[in-house]
View 1 (cartoon, rainbow, N blue to C red):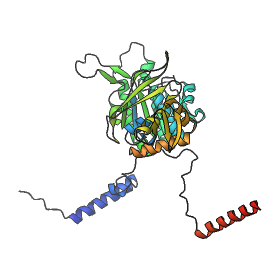
View 2: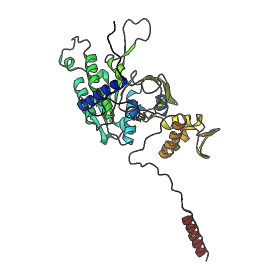
View 3: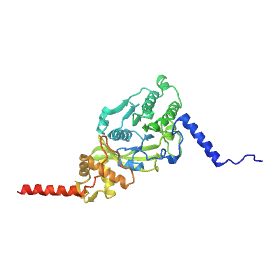
View 4: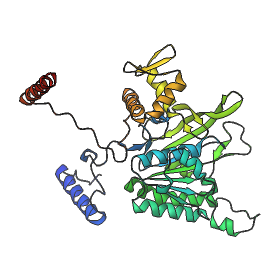
Length: 375
């Protein structure tokens, strides 16, 4: 026999209101909210990767802010290059960036060539994995840093391993360290809108008969906590005669919590320059008829910008405002958010329509000036 009495809807709503009031009093305003309040559902802020094709593949126009990102791949595939470009893009928007160099291998000269402002970049070279993650946690909690790169997860060596002997077996130590750190970091990362990028390396699993034997270091925690995971691979070489001047690169969006995953982007990384962004703008612009191509000539708005792709690329490189204008048009066509305002740049104000009387006065003035000059 069921003795439960049906609960009145008004009583349920009163009980819910009382519970929400208690939660708000105990944990602060906004601890629990309705989706329609507009505080939960909002447009995702992003920072560009420095590659237009990859920004499009990510679906939201770049790497999402306030999230954990993992970039992994084989050696010399372009992982650090991609993160340094993201730092340069964030600095262009006026953001503060930090680079936690656990590998102790950052090439500051190369970073400068990619557009990184070293005078505004925070760099740390920690001794242990715990120290690296504590520094990251302190920077995130401060709310004053917009982008943090940890290079790399494989180099986050636990203190016990450093202080122990060379042959000591310490299974699962790094995985536990990463799991604990990510549990602690995730809430702060979202609250302060800080983007944290972990660079990771690939290892081979022993005895795998079916499927890929590849895995990443640091256990499974990062795979779960990351909103975006990028698999970057070098697919070929770019040559000028017999000299290798760059790498053909493919990036696959393996995981994406902010847009549909499994999209791919292919682009060139030129040694000493990074991603050929202007080349991508020309390719995607001509594919979507924003840039006209007639024979070997490329034109924009009826004006020629170069004969051959290299000349057109150099033309846009010398005119960053024009390149940015074309890129934003490409992004609009592909349904991807446009680039944010640069540091110190003000949004364009709509032109005010001129009043009829003032126009007439200006015309009269010009005509009288012209008459005086004729005289």
